[in-house]
Length: 76
Image (cartoon, rainbow, N blue to C red; front, side):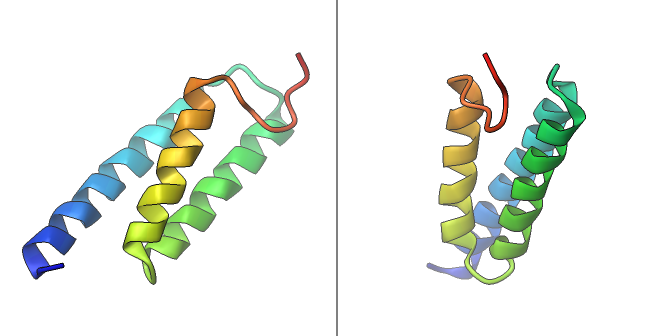
């Protein structure tokens, strides 16, 4: 991937991470569930430093889970 493509991917991942953090903050879930979700996002953020494409895929799965209502630790 060229440098421009890498920069575009980095920007897209950064924007999506920010949006995901906002979504997690807005969820009406127990604090322990929110903390677990936030930790997952922090792991994805750390992974982006070494494997940007992999982090983008993990973030996509995380967001899809939120979209589908699959929230780990939430009973219902």
